Amino acid sequence: WDPLKGSSGDPERGSILQRHAMVHLLLNLGIDALAFDFDTFWFSDARRRLEDIAEAEGADVLMTRHLDADCFNMGLLYIRASGRTAEWYSRYLEWLHQHPYEREQRGVNSLLGFTHQRVSFSPKNLPSVKPVALDDLNEFASSRGGWLGDWSKLKFFHWVNPAVTLTSWGAIKFVDLMALYEAALHHTTASELARAGPFSFTAALDSATPDSFLGPIRDILDSLTVPSEPERQACW
Image (tube, rainbow, N blue to C red; front, side, top):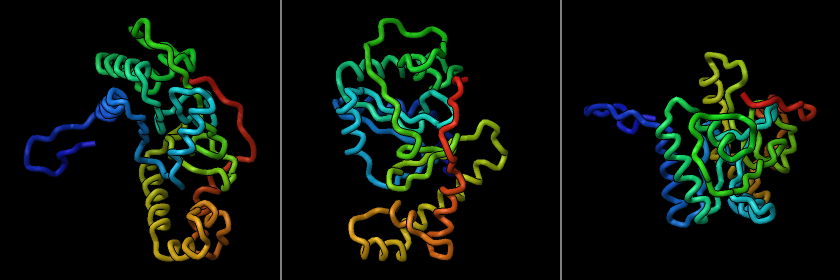
């Protein structure tokens, strides 16, 4: 991300640290934080759902995974504000800033103790926080490993780079996401949803026929379904 791209001044290159800095600030202000990647699509407002899961699980941190591996993915991050989470995240951000050769995702997995991955110079005596993985079978799904295709549960989808990433992957997911956004905001979709009652884009997609306006959009997500949950591999 380059905030000054196209400007006449000296270019200021962006950094993944900027997102983490915003999460750090929110938590230190006592505000729950929700961060997600741009290559994602929200099918509904899931904030209340995330709050309910965190409350039911006694979780401090909620994150997505991808179906082919048992590790957290930074595509979606929800953190409940507290003194413990503010301190934990501040120290995580400090560690990430001081060790730019480390990967943010590997660091989160290691420092949360979710995987057995190791990183260099781990911070000592981090506050204890409880992480919980969100349902990636249907509810908070991704293209990596696929999803099981239950439209009634789908709330969020992340176009995660495949294990073997094609050079055209960026263009592929851009086209997919643009098609989803254009369909969701199209007047035909809006009219149909207005007649159907409460907003449910997933219900409209679930009932879409191949020759309907939303048929090709449904095909995008259907092409990423799998018949059953694959065996999860160890994280790299």
